[in-house]
Length: 433
Image (cartoon, rainbow, N blue to C red; front, side):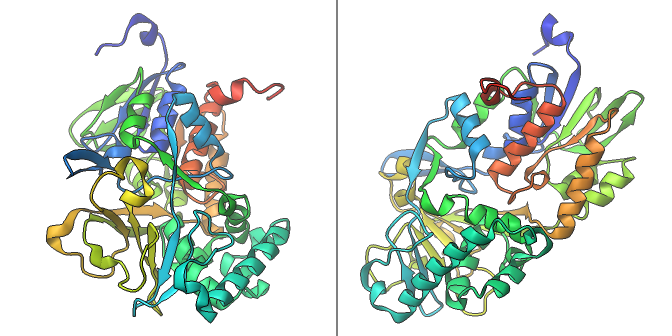
């Protein structure tokens, strides 16, 4: 569609990537700029890997990976969804932890995990009581320690050693939980700056239930792609200076110049696109990332055979492993799937999933945070503060948080504010500058 006369008079802006960061950046900037969005996949990024699930005569879209959030940490994301009119529902993420012998280590029946409430026979286990007591002690201390000024100077692993955190709780519950939250292995969790990790663990997420978008990402994406031009199947090859503008060339042969460019791709992907931005490429290459695999399937053999009434989330925690295998029973956790036959989403599958039971398997990468990457991001922000800047980096790695949905939206808000856009959910607050 050709832009109308009002759009023609606006400066041009390209957004590269359609994850939540790119979508929210495009949405926030569309009133001030003529926005063109580039996506390498055939579908907008948040729904690029979604799969159809047909059972009991019902067809549903399953998001890969599952997008969940909660109050306490996801302020901008929830404000954005409220502004867009996205319906939010509670999601049951009570959990069970079991080892390689399928011995249940902990089974709690609530949706919060800060203070586990043992369920079923697991409460009889001395180890379960040990884990519960160590959990209470850990969170009580963490809520005091989060105010320490030196936490930015140590990593989370060092904090765990200094604080005397109980080993059973750390190995059985804390590291498996945070590895799936951060989508990384246990060592990467330990490498996080301690203040970022404690900020997440003590902000209230452990006291509040989990939520998800009632209709999944297919309901969210169209709400944000309003009054913008979307170009799918358009992987970007090069972004480089072109006089007073920036040139964006795709691998499919498109070539266009823009007044401003927002790269909402992962750091390593952004670095690969840049030509002539030597300093930024070097800084982007200091952002670590980890690869993961996600499977959607109907193979119930991933559940422990011992015990009944298994919770929606199962943590398979083999001794000596660098990650857990985490399976979510989507028909228990997600209300819109409750009338269908049991289907799972498993992160980091270790055990064999029957091929005839697997609907999809997706490999993806996610950024992590270290003290060094934090310094690199600070330097990238300094470069974006320069008066003549036209290249903007947007993504979950660019915020001072764990790289989750909230961090991605935070980064898009920061870019939009730099470029003079009004943030709808902030505009009504008095005396904000």
